[in-house]
Length: 226
Image (cartoon, rainbow, N blue to C red; front, side, top):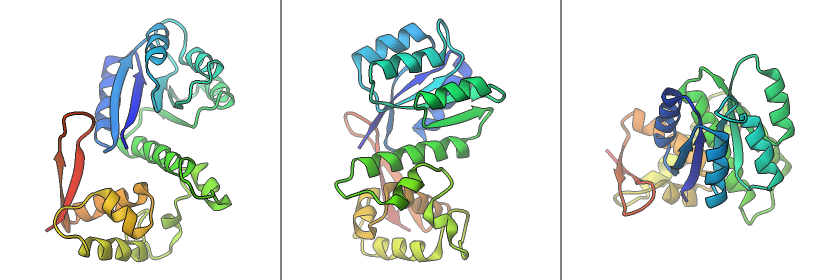
C-alpha cells in the first residue's frame, strides 16, 4: 500500500528536508506540498490524503487553525504537527484536536522515522480484520512500546535475537528476490517490524536491496540474499 502525504510548511529548507526524509521510507508518496492555510484547505478539498505533516507557523492562518478546520470537516487523515520547543499552548491545543504526534524542531531522521513507523503500525492494526487486543492498543498509543525493545538480550536497539532468527528463517525460504510482504506473511509480524529487521540485515550486508520503479506510485523494494 502507498500512503499519500501532504506537507504543510512555509520554510523551503525545512520542506525540502521533510520531503527528503519521507522519500527515504518505502510506501510513502508526497502527493502535495504547500506553505499556507489557504492552499492547504484547497488541496485537502481536492484530495483525501492519508497523512498530513503540519507546521504550526504557516502563511495566513496558523497550522492549528488548519487542524481545527479539518477536524470540523471530519477530514479522515492522521495529523502530525511539527513545531518548535516551548510552544506548549500549541501542543495542548493540538492534542485536543487529535494530533497523533509532535516532532520538535530541530529533529533528526531517526525521530522522524519513528513517528512514520508508528503511523504505519496504527494503520495496519486499525484496518486489520482481526480483533485488536489491549496490548496492541497500548502499543499504538506509544512510540516507545515496541515489543522487541523489551527483550533483555536485544542484539541492537529495538531488535531481539528470537525475532531476528524468525526473519532469517523466512529469508532462507525465499527463492530469488523477495519483498517486505513476502516476509510479513510468513513471519506473522507487522510491516514495521519486518522493515526494521531487513534494514538491520542490509546494514550487516546479509542481504541487499534494490528499488524497482513502476509506471505510477512509489518504487517497490526488492531484497536478495548476498
